[in-house]
Image (cartoon, rainbow, N blue to C red):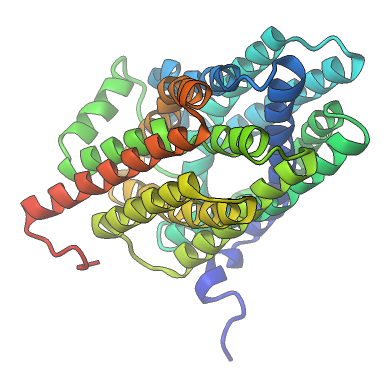
Length: 409
């Protein structure tokens, strides 16, 4: 008889990973609620549809991914990952609760959002490489690509629920309650991790403490043309292509004149596409530069179609295509980088991945916001499309130098 959790859901054979997935699903719903509420707060209450201010919030939120890069990867490689994750999750939960209290009390100002974006981004910068490499401790290398894809499935299933719930909350009781509920949702992850079977964790080889930990990781990547190409692709796509909060909010408010519920629905519809991409990635056993190139090209096509969309529902459909391609692409880079990297280097390599992909938004988000303000939201999407097509060409160039057919993998 076939195992019911084989194939697409094979990683769920792990007790610890099942607990983690359940807790993360609850927390991810809260995270998506806060994302939508924060964008709506900045665009409609603290400014008059100022996309540059929203770009500044995104820039500050992702700046720590670059600023803390010398330390975040080393921490992931050297420290107890479970304990470190519990600390970062608790910190981000407290920050969300404080932001909710300020908003409900009516004391919130734009500079407060800037400060909280930077502080929560600092927690996320430390959290991200640990969370991504900790997956290998739960399931082992054999099921790692599947577990990465199922993590994304959970995140995007939550993205179907969180934005819609946030839209209803904003319309009925106010923005601050979305922040409060997100803060409380972190308790689900903390609770799930407290019940882990520690004996079943597959502890990775820990790195030795050195004074050049970050530089050692950078040199390791620089010696690998395939890893360099992946990081260049992630920089292009992260800097200009993954600015979905700006794309969605400016198109919803300035082009389609949507209310909070219709705005939240757009994010939920986008998540349908992302979920499809996550499930597709979960069913795959192998990925390579060729599939990354195709994913970047389809992502660019989706952004181009979104820029040309004549109406709300056409825009939503184009978003779904973009999200599916983006998810397949980012999952692929996660699996390739982890599986082709020495275990003692994974934390630093994954910190570079996150720093390049999300830290690039520190540069790109203000630029994309400025383009949306001065030339219109459709042109900001065109910038994203151009970056994605360029990233696809980077992979094609590397494959051509290897003389490897595009559809080889």
